[in-house]
Image 1 (cartoon, rainbow, N blue to C red):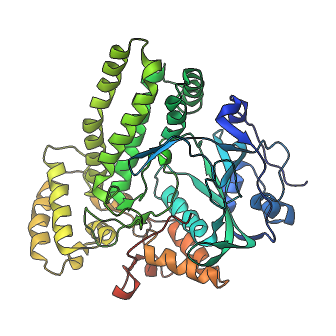
Image 2 (image 1 turned 30 degrees about the vertical axis):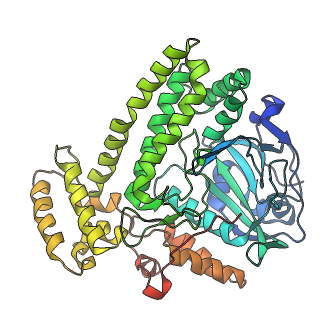
Image 3 (image 1 turned 180 degrees about the horizontal axis):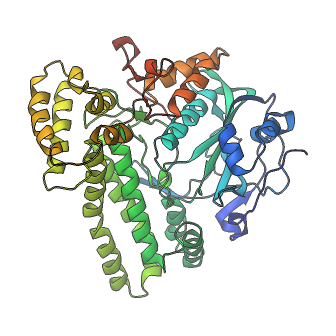
Length: 477
């Protein structure tokens, strides 16, 4: 095989109860759809080799490259608040780990690669809609500076996947700092397997937080990383859609782009996920849900934090008690930057909240209002400009106490281009018809989200027309 993938596997060396070793299921007629050449080079993989027949065969699951040690990971999780004691990679295979040219260790996983022991009546496959969605949205998040899994490639399988109707199948090659989830810890905690919990904790510390000196420090590090992450989501109007504990990565990366979406018209109660009927994972609830998920993580670590149960609870609770202040500080930091403020003053958070309240009342476009603060067009997104102009007077008074290039700071903190839902759906519809150009063009526009849009990128700044509005997004399973 001419394709060389620099594998250096460590998760596969953990005890056998952490996974099932198995190869992906081959597909009928693999064909490349989208390749992330820049990421391939970053990983130390020749992108031209990935475009070859043998490269596409690897990305589709038809061939296992030398050095791989493929496996499906097991985990548990709370899904919409209900605990499932065993979940796991029901349609994914971890091929192995790569240490890239930058020295970072990352997982290489095939998503949509066939049935595993954890498929739970599922077919283990994906169709090209969710594959293209995750490719575009995860790469957009990377360009926006948000910690995230990434997409190396999307391939068609030449097979049909049955969902509400037949769709063409696809496989996504996903790259992640790891696929260790809160749910991974929950799997062993639910079984009282302290030995496995200790091994997993030691592994997570060594891989992600080598400065942490034990399980309590790991908890504190994950709290900090996740608080930063969700604050960044909030600053982009991003709604994950399915913040289950099995979708909460201990690395602090955004993972599992299913029914996710970026808001157009702002409202804090916005929900897109077709399965989130009660609004559990609405935009404004995400920091609260993160606290709930982190509490489940803390509970898993109790036997390792202290042999005395009461002391363990007290120490974990002290760490969790820091979360509200930490989350608020991260939210304030993000929105202070979005208002062009470099210095911290006491009323800054209230200033941001007042703007959001005016936007919610007007259903103003989230991205364009904030970007408009840099170019003077923000007021144009309000049918009734009076509430915005009253706020703007106070904002300008606050800016008068700032130094430096405020306009440059605003442009650097507020993207002009995001993966708007109607554009993503447009790309998926075209791909179903065999036309990948809309997906490629959108990917190109999303690669420089903070730049002043040129003629090619400018159409992607437009909110949807009424007939284009996407009201619901779907998981794809």
